[in-house]
Structures are given as structure tokens and as C-alpha cells.
Amino acid sequence: MEHFKSLKQETKKERREAEEFAIRQTTHIQALFADDKGDLGLKAIDGITGYNNDPFDPDPYKHAYRAGKRAVSVILRGMIDRDVKKAKAEMEKEDETRM
Image (tube, rainbow, N blue to C red):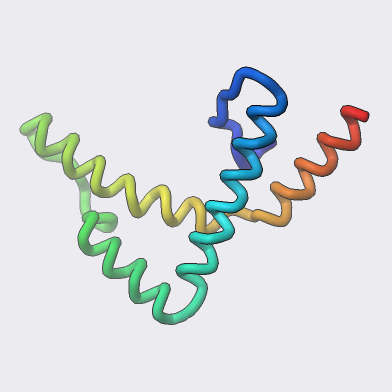
């Protein structure tokens, strides 16, 4: 599936379970940030994580720390922007081709 390419499970069953879990998690995150309060919450998280700032620091430990914090917002925003309906349709299509 295009939306969850990074999932690396051993069997088809494990992959299917991982895809379903990822879709559920994505749906929950999208619902959490769907309204105005969610938008305010996301902006607060962006501020805490330094999303709009360059994480670079000459000290590699500070750089890694800042980049890790920023990754939280990057991951959340990626989940919010993901097309869950398309992912579900791709799963169903894969199921049909396996039969």
C-alpha cells in the first residue's frame, strides 16, 4: 500500500494487521485535530517541538535532540494529511486480487 510502505512485517497476515492498526491510529489522530481546538493544540505542539525552526546546532547532541522533538510534529502532520479512504480502498483492492 502506498500510504504505509514503511511497514515491514514477515507475513501477509502481520502486514494486514499492521496496516489496519496504522489506519485506526491515523483516523484517531485526524479526529483529535479536526476542529478549531485541535488546530490550536497542533500549533501548541509545533511551538513545543520547534516545528517551524531549523534544528541545526553545531553540537551533534543538541542537533539530534532538536530534530527528534521536531519529528513529533512532522509525524503528526503526516498522519493528519494522509488519505485514509484511499488507503482503505487500496487494502480492499489488494484483498480482491489475492482471491
